[in-house]
Length: 429
Image (cartoon, rainbow, N blue to C red):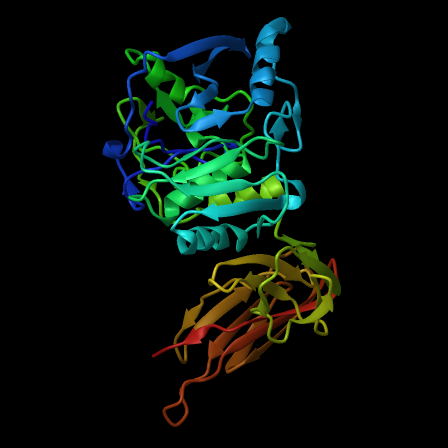
């Protein structure tokens, strides 16, 4: 039986197949085969809706590129035979224990493919933005083997999530690139197709009338999936629009196989845990644990905070004096892929007003009226008047052809005590 060329999406926790090109994807990139005479379609009632499992020999599929284990098949059978056929409540982002995360977030692999450089780059693109770690297998019993396989017409994954004791393979078609390798690896991590998430009807219309069973079951909602955020039309796991699947309210989208989207990264963080763990706001200092750390930097922090390495994958961000602002704690791996966490240091607040000013002109800058004991200081300008939460200034004229260095400093009573914020408008003629 030939596999379909299958596009998928990530935020519904799922897996998918691939395409002929790793750029924009269109309907020509999906090959849907008529059912083989050897295929048997088993129908179950889950959550009050029919759910199809296709059997070919001793293999079971919930889509032509998603094979399931005997354990997962038994869960489907048990749910389908129970009163009402209801899926159990979600536990740790996994419905009814159907999909297992990799233990300690560690994905063990073996490469029996000629494309090891591309496979390792795909790993880096995932690992650099998530808490997932890829480790070459030594004697671990549960691992995934990457192989070259042109026999199916597309790449594929024989598993969804970690399955103990079963043979797990990701087959790579030679015509498909790094984006497809990422796509299939996401299947191995435990993700279903985006268009099969349980809330998909809020975002897309799916019309399978007239399709054969082999075609229609590939669009069925996965009752064991968990949705993170809104449906991500830019996900590396999503199908392209077609006469079967259209956008609710009109419009369209372009499926891509370039890189993980922001939604994909967020979904990985939600499922496997955040790469940078720690508070989003601090008054004096905060400790941050970084999973799989690369190069660690603290950006936009000049005069606001400093960074200290503590060891054991931990770093401390310490506030400088009473200064306040938003800083970025960033980790970047050797391939240049990065994750950052924005931290509010010292209960920062906004100074509102013109970001671009002209010499000799008058401008007003304000802070939130809820702040207490506000005082202003300006440089490169003359203070004309102040109120409880605003200052009116006149920017100085150029001197000897040089534009003034203009800034506004506001000090106020905040949740962190006294905090000072500085704004630097740009002066131009």
